[in-house]
Image (cartoon, rainbow, N blue to C red; front, side):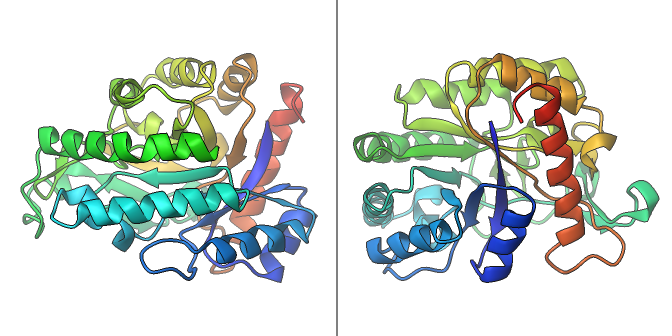
Length: 320
C-alpha cells in the first residue's frame, strides 16, 4: 500500500516537489489537457509519464478523460460508437506509454453538492449535500434517463472497452455516483450501492474491470461503518480496487457533510486495517480536503494534513 497525490490537473515543478517533500511516490493526473482529437495522444502520454519519472516519482493513473470524449456514450446518443473507438485509442496509447490505470465515472450530471460552507471543525469549509434542496430541481436538458437506460449504456461501453484494456494491460477503475442517490434532475445515478458495484463486476469478468474505490462516497451510501469495512474487504480481496479516495463524511444520504479524515463517522484506522488484511496493493489519495485557514487555492495545507494522517495510519498497520 502506498500514497499518491491526486486531483492534479496540471503537472508542474511545484506539484512534483510537493509530492517529493511529503514522501508521496505516486501521481494521479485528473483529466489532463493533452493533445488528441477526442482521445489522448501516445506521445503526449509518454512525455507525461517520463516527466513524472524525472522527479523520481511514478505516474500511477489518469483519473477521468474529458467528458467530451464520451458524453454520447453516457447518454446513449448517436455517435457513441465513434467515441468508444476513441476511448479505446486512449486506452491503447496509455498501455503502450506505460500508464496502467484509467479512472473513470459513468455519471451524466457529475458530482453534486448544495453547499461549501465553514461548518467543519474550527470553521473549516466543507462541502455539503442535502437532497431535500434538489428534490424539485428542474429536469436536465438530457432528462429523462432512467436506471434501465443507464445500465444498458454502461454495459454497452464495458463490453467494448474492457477487452481492449485487458489486452493492453490497463485497469479501468469506476468511481461511484456522488452523491449516491437514485436520481437528480430526472437523470438516474446507478452506481449508488455496493450491490451496484458487484453488478458492474459481473457484466464482464476481467482483471481490467475494476474500481476506483471512493471510500467517502461508499460511506455516503449509509450510516453503517461496518458496511464500509465489509466493502473494502470484499473488493480488495478480489484485486478489484485500483486506488482509493481516502476521505470521510459525517453521515450518509440524504444529507451529509464531508469532514476531516479523523472527524467523520467511519473509523479510518479500522478501514486501513481492512485494506491491509485484504492484501490491498494499491494507492491512497486524499480527496475533497476541507479548507484550512489561510490555505492556498490548491489546498496545500489541507492536502498535507490528510497525507500525513494517511502516512501515520499506514505505519500503524505495518504498511508504512
